[in-house]
Length: 152
Image 1 (cartoon, helix red, strand yellow):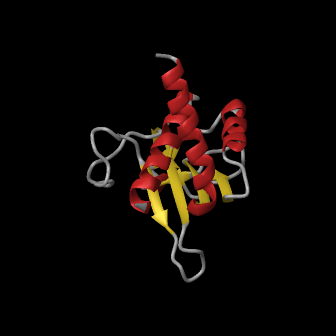
Image 2 (image 1 turned 60 degrees about the vertical axis):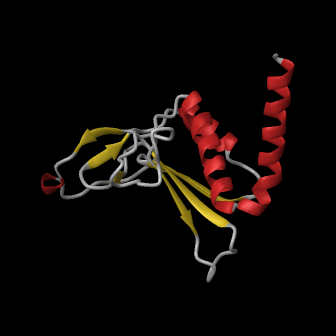
């Protein structure tokens, strides 16, 4: 039950991000075998350990589209600030969110269900409580069903 719910939520969030111009990396089938042709985006779903977190705590990494390949052998020091790009994986840099994109992400991911939001140059990380977010997600699904019925 929770596995399908978390996939539904991540799919919903991914679609919202894509609709608002956030460029998420295409899925690498070898690296993300849980995905299918229906869900071709590079997103990590991590269920946090119950030792330090509640059982319903999840961390979602939306891996952003890579803008360039980097030869790490020729880079000695990389300063990471809000205006530069951070590295992810081997030899890639993610693009930097525009101010409007960053503001959208910050306003979309907010509420008492959220542990934290971290916007990096290579990914957007959302850690949240599934049980706290579920009522909000349910309201959104009901609203979507009502809108679809009204549009018929």
